[in-house]
Amino acid sequence: MTCRLTLLLALALASASSHAHHGVATLGAVGLQGPGAPIETSSSATLPEGAWLLSLKMDHAKSKTYDPDPANPEGDYNQYWMLGVGYGFKPWLSGYLVQPYNIKKDEPGGLNSRGFTDLSVMGVVGFKYDEGFSLVPATESLDDLMDWHFTAYLGASLPTGNANHRLADGSIDPGKSLGFGKSSFTYGLTATKQFSENATAVFEVGQIRFQKYRYDDDGDPGTPDTVRFGTETRINAALAYRLMTLPDSRFRLDGNVEANYLALGRDIEDGVPATATGGRMLYGVIGARLYKDNLSFGLAVKKPVWTDLNESAQQQGAEGKEKYRRIVTFSAMF
Image 1 (cartoon, rainbow, N blue to C red):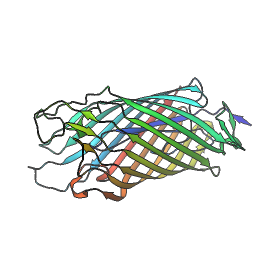
Image 2 (cartoon, helix red, strand yellow):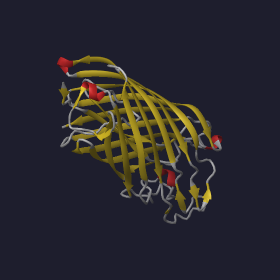
Image 3 (cartoon, helix red, strand yellow):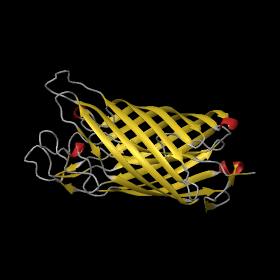
Image 4 (cartoon, rainbow, N blue to C red):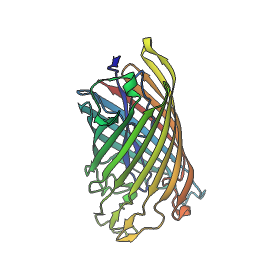
């Protein structure tokens, strides 16, 4: 039996902290039957040919604070809004545009920033393994959907945001800028396997690389003139489990658990490795995804469960120093 299932694809950006202020598109798809998709880990799915996807994600990262003195304000939270549009050029080829909007808020007395940041462009090629590798076909049976599926993705940010955004005091803080000034590059691989009627395992490995950029002179000797943000390496694993399906109502509910490993290289400031940047961390994610007709809603909480940060005591507000991250996603396909 072939199944031209309506795919409900959740496109999102897993955003980073105030020190890196960027994100990576994570892709996943699910039908009322067939494999499930996590929230932060990219699943091996492409859009049907000729289909459009509209997606919105909010990632709210609440920081731990350590200094109670109001004269020394620390980072309070970072909030990332990400609007994505996807199109299926072929059953095995999808393209995406993602426009982020970032809010970076300090405690009272600090310096805040908000605004649209660099537009991202990404292409995804899907393939599968069934007695050999082949591109994803237009239709697959339920048995075919249980084969190993893979994607390779490649993307870049475009320097559409204001890298020289000035804060209230006139300074330029690269960690609170609204762009990189030059393109960053994203690439990676995913693998997805539905092991039973209800359980799907997902794996992903990917990297983001950045270029050196020279900022405008803000007259502050304490801020660097040139910065190249450290390379990001992600290794993710996830389990999506179908909890409920109501075919007549076109409703499905999945539970998700994930482990997200992130290794950050040191930033390079004025040609010198910067202190209090980079390190390794492991996040735990627990969430749920609800599907109704051609709509998808996701909700998750993400927390660091292990960290090994460089000069950890000085990295307040960075990745690995969150109290939690609250993630909400919405998507619709038409």
